[in-house]
Amino acid sequence: MVNVLGYDALADALTAKGIDVDAVKAKLKQQHIETPSWGYANSGTRFKTFPWRGAARTIQEKLSDAGYVHKMTGVAPSVAIHIPWDKTDDWTMMKQFAAEQGVSIGAVNPNLFQDDQYKLGSITHPSASVREEAIAHMVECCEIMTKTGSNLLSLWFADGTNYAGQDSIVERKHRMESALAETYKHLPPGSRMLIEYKFFEPAFYHTDLADWGMAYATALKLGEQAQVLVDTGHHAQGTNIAHIVAFLLDEGRLGGFHFNARRYADDDLIVGTNNPMELFEIYTELVMAGEKADHVAYMIDQCHNIESKLEAMIISVINCQIAYAKALIVDTKTLQARQMEGDVLGAHAVMTDAFQTDVRPLLAQVRLEMGRPADPIAAFRADDYEKRIADERGAASGVGGGFPT
Image (tube, rainbow, N blue to C red; front, side, top):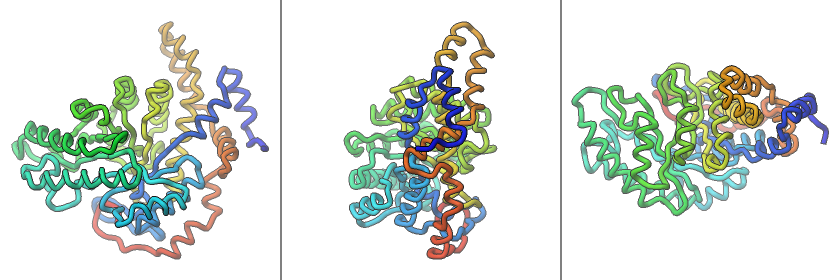
């Protein structure tokens, strides 16, 4: 196979540093980034959903688009689903349809934030009947996991309060723990419950799962199948996410990621666009953890509001590939030696050297060896897939704010 321009020089430079290029390429070929079904649908801000010609309207169309992204990148073989947005009466047929698109169904995400009865919370609601309804929905999602072969139940709650005294914070904690414990009993064998957190919004006085520590403490009470899901957009400004990742990895409780980016708060910008150094630091901790990171699930959680759904998703996957490739070429022997010597800037220089390395020729070579386009974005723009689905599907009318339609 002909090598990509610039690959040989990069490979020689990495080899000179003691990096096993073939081993790096092998790991890059095994990378797995799960894309979200809702990322292919129309979505918007709190004020308006902006229609995009060709945006997916059904689970079949979402799976088709995800299959196309996997065809372009080679490392996006599964699709997270959201219930009831993606609910179907025949999961056996849907599994087969997904396989025909070259993908599989991944994490199952219950919707516990859109129905009117959840205005005061779902699993922390003061009403026992509302809590029971929320639990029943999570149990239903566990049953869908069994039918789809999924091994991940991904949980995020909008539960919280807006005013001091609105409800008992401690009682809401107890309700949450009780509901999750009941749901935990219904997890399929060998599966995991991933508990996500968010430090504010849509509740502004307190959110019931405000940070990784709360999610971690909750997971410990539930059992080994419960772990923490880190959403890269759900932190206060200045939070060192790599630190959180390192801690949870060492504790064996890092379950997975929802990758995205945010400028001020919340998320939904393309991962790696706002702070690529942060994404590299996160991946470096994962690489350094070795086997402790083998079980970690890597999922994108983005609703693309004004940009092409497909191109945005491809860029998201590529940015994760770039960050991982840079983390794999960190000169760990030199890094560790300088750390032990107390060489502060020398150790930092090892990190920045890897981060500043242009790994695009390496990734292009890996893609060619996998039978994928060397440049997925160029291939996408030269293809007519987006035009074809736009002509076939048209554009749904824009509706109120927020979530996929």
